[in-house]
Length: 479
Ligand code: TRP
Image (spheres, rainbow, N blue to C red):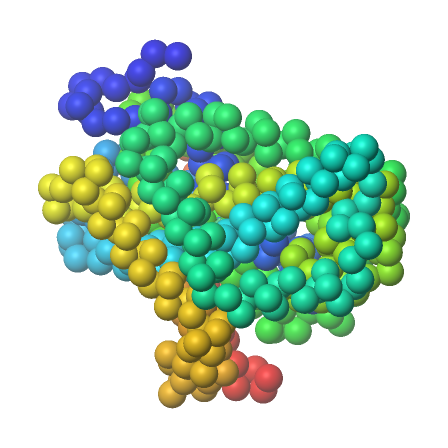
C-alpha cells in the first residue's frame, strides 16, 4: 500500500489505507473488555437479557458515537483537543468544547494505568501455561490436560499468590507497559498499524480455533441458551446500567480514542460503513468470546457467575480436565494478551498525540512521559492488592467506599469520566457541529443522516444522562 499522506497532512503520520485504519480501530476496540469483562458481566448478570440489552446499546448509542468521534478526528487532523477546536471553529461554536478532549486524554491515561496491571496478570498466566506446555512436551505428552497433577486449590491459589507479591506484579506490569510504549513510540505506520496487521489476524485465528475446540469438548447448546434466551426479570436498572457502560468501554468510546485514531485518516469519506464495521466486529468478538468460554465452563460444571476470576481461576481448572488442555490453555492466554496489546496502544496514543499536538513534544518524549506516568499510577494500583490493601482513595464517597485502588481508578473512569465524555460528544455533535460539514466529511446522506442525527442529538444524551445519574447515585434506584 502507498502512504496516503497528502496536502497539508503530508508531514503527519497516517494509516496506509482504509482497511489499515479499520483493522487498527478494531484492534483498539477488541481487548480485555471483550474477552474478560464481557463474559464476566454476562455470567454475573444471568445471560440472555443482559446480552440482548447490550447489543441494543451498541447499535443505538455506541454506533452513532463511533461515527461522531471518527468524524471529529477526520475533520480536525490533529490530536483530540485540537480537532474539537477545529470543528468548533468551523461550526461557529465555542472552542471551550475542546475540554472534553482533555478530559478524554486524562481518562485514557488513567485507564491505561490499570489496564496494564490486569494485562500483566494475563502475561503471568501466559508464562505459567507456557511453562506447563513445555513440561508436557518434555514428558512426551503434548496433548495432555493443563497443570497435570495440581489440585483445584493449588490452581485457584495461584492468583492469590500473584496478588500477594508486589515484585511479581510489578515485573509483569513493567513488561507490558514497556511493550506498549515501544510500539507507540514507533508511530502510526510502522508501530501501531504494523502491530495490528500482525496481531489481529492471529487473534481471529486463535479465537475461532478455540471456539471450535470448545464446541467439541464443551456444552455449546447450554452456552447458546444461556447467552441468547432472555429472562427479562433479570434486567433490573443496575444491570442495564452495567450493560450500557460495557458497550461504551468495549467500543473505546468517551475518551477521544477514536477521535485520535480518526485524525490519522487523511482521505476518503465512507465513515458510516467504516463505523459499522468496527461496531459489528467488536460485538461479534464479544459474543464469540462468550461462545468460547461458556461451553467449557458448563462442560466441567463450573459456575458461570464466578466474577472477575472466571477467566483466571476457573478456566485453568477446566483446561486441566480436557484433552489438549495444556496447549489450548496456553493459546487462550496468548489470545487475551494479543487483544490487550492492540487496545493498550490506543490508550497510550490518546495522551501521546495530545503531547505532540498541544505541547509540541516529540513522539518519543510524549510517549515516554505519559507511558511512564501511567506506569507509576499502575504501581499504586498493584500495591493496592498487598501493602496498601487498606487504602480506599475515594472512600469518602459512598459509591467507592469499599473499592481498592485499582477498582477505584476503573470505577471512576468507567462510571464518571467515560459517560461524561460520551455525553459531551453527543451534545457537541448533535447540537453544535455544522450539519453540512458533517455530511461532507462522513459521506452520510438522506435517511441515514436523519436517523443518525436523531440518535446522536436525542437518544444518546438522554440515555447516557440516565446511566450517569443511576451509576453515580444508585440510591435513586433503591439498590
Ligand atoms: N475497548 C478496549 C477493550 O474492550 C479498551 C479500550 C481501549 C478503551 N481504548 C479505550 C476503553 C478507550 C475506553 C476508552 O478492552
